[in-house]
Image (cartoon, rainbow, N blue to C red; front, side):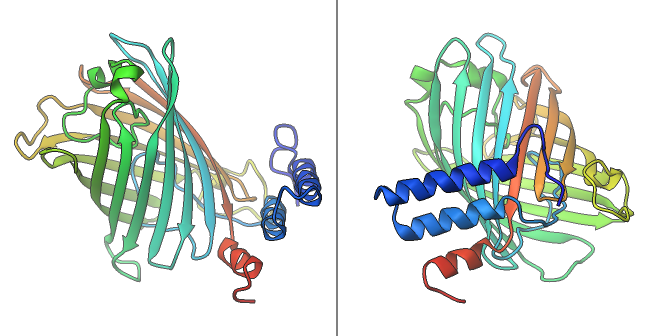
Amino acid sequence: MTPVFPALFPTHLARLDLHSAAAEASRRGKLPRRLLILLSLVFVGVALPGWAQENPYIVTYDHYLEEPGSLEVEYFSTFGTQRQGNDFHAFWAEFEYGATAWWTTELYLDGQTTFGDSTIFTGFRLENRFRLLQREHFVNPVLYVEYEQISGADKILKEVEGHDVESDYAVPNAIARRAHNHELELKLLLSKTFKGWNIAENTLAAKNLTGGNPWEFGYAIGASRPLALKASAQRCNLCRENFIAGVEMYGGLGDRHSFGLHDTSHYLAPVVAWNLPSDWTLRLSAGFGLNDNSHRLLLRWGVAREFSGFGEMIARVFGGRK
């Protein structure tokens, strides 16, 4: 197997170093034996061959779920410009697990750095997606349910809802972090893939469960296609079929008392994903604000790695199914 990033990420050396460090810690009594075995399996999984085609969207969801028993670990960053305030870098980690063929569950951990201010942890999110129809149909619906416990300083902009506007993110961290949001978010995800093209539309409804806040609404739409539909005879990193390009648009639709486009923000973002044969995926997105309420630029990038058969590895470690 050809290494994914021979210069940037020598996985075979990193795996050996991490495994040796874990073994040494175990000998010193710092790691339980089962945890050592689990870490060893994860490190071995870094170099296992596999293949997964991931869409390029950052905000929009299509109808595809995580493979049952597979774990995908992802890191994303958002650089946002800020008028009347300091620019920021928001970041989050995702742990996405395919519980069944119709259910994917996910944990987010959020943080942000506001330049000239501070770096803070802003909260967590628990996401679940449920595929409503087993087979492919003309339109494929997925139900999305998420619970968020985040502070008012959260800036990852994973979605735009209600009357969210740029000026909301200009508040200093010391003040914004005092607000604590316990939010329920529901989405209906509609998606279709036809002749290589994926078309997806998401409708969002969210409610902050603290206080008497009204339901807020938003949307996201996306379209994408691989640069080539026919796979090459040999596995390679730079083959055209490994690249998926597209565009997405997202924004707020007001709330229950004031539904519509008044005092809302909207973004248009070209997106691209590079899927490598070793289950690594890189994503890049440049989002441009479409009105005066929007950030002028939201530059996003991310890296993801899928671990196939992770559920079976966990079962073996803890004495479950062989």
